Length: 321
Image 1 (cartoon, rainbow, N blue to C red):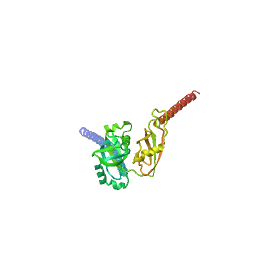
Image 2: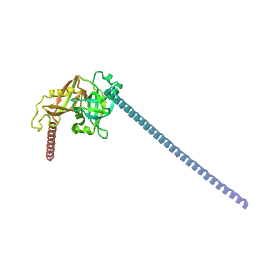
Image 3: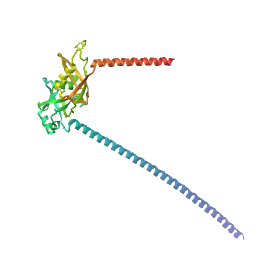
Image 4: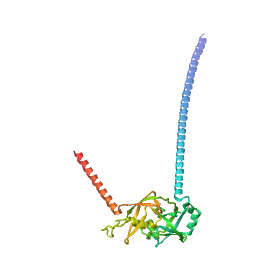
């Protein structure tokens, strides 16, 4: 009886332990399963966020790439438009004739004009470019430029052509044209820097033109500056410009009155910055001389400075009140 009772007790106890262990295992399995589910859900959420972020970045890159593409297209379009505009301007300036030569200048001391002398090869090239056909009966006109050592334009003017008899590689420059290319540097400068770029250009003809000039220095005064010279500027200019084919803004125009030499600076031209002087009605306006203009500007600046000082003093007095 004792033995059987013990066996029953032992079996009953062992059965209870087994039930307990199985329950714990089931609970652990459930906990592990739930933990894996949570981990999986978290992983899915992270992957979803990463995917969403990646799509957002891809969209931003796409938008940025599209913006860059559009910007590049805009720049290319504007560049093409600018190049096309330059071509049209250049065609208008040259009539489609391509002629540019670097020539060595030599003086034409006896020429009272602004017409240069070019080599024979120049007319051959101009004929080949059909420049004579495009100009008809009009004169051939050229843009003349001198440059510094870095290739920057120092001075520029325009001229007609007298003949094509200069030695190859050279250009004959009359004194009036040389003055426009040298100005305050003096005519000797052209001997030291004789290279002149000659470019064929077409200057339009206008029935009505306007020119504003300014006397250099003290203007029309005696050498000592004490007396004003009385001269008929209209008559003197008509005589001076009689042999001029063209004139440009910035040109220095020498005039002579009673063996005295004066110089006028072309400050403005209408309707263009360079015009033909053949068969045109030219109206001229004379500005105050450089010295007079400087005096006027100095007085105006002094007056403005005085007014600023008065305003400051008034403001200080009002602040004290």
